Length: 75
Image 1: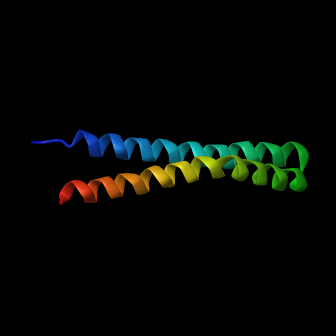
Image 2: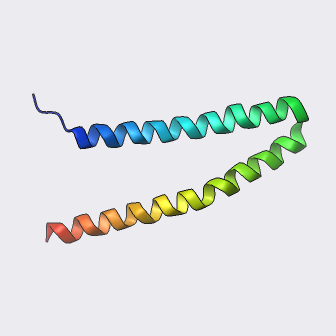
């Protein structure tokens, strides 16, 4: 029974990142909403998304480079 540890590691990483984002959005912004109201929650959501934008851009660029390198190695 062979196990693909790279696939497992990638799957675990993706699940961890998704879990972090869900907790950040629902718990973090939910607490802002509960303590300060709707206006502050909208501002908090914009700040959270603005802070995540550079991280998502870097992740997207690295994913694109990974795809390019994999296609180049196949040839």
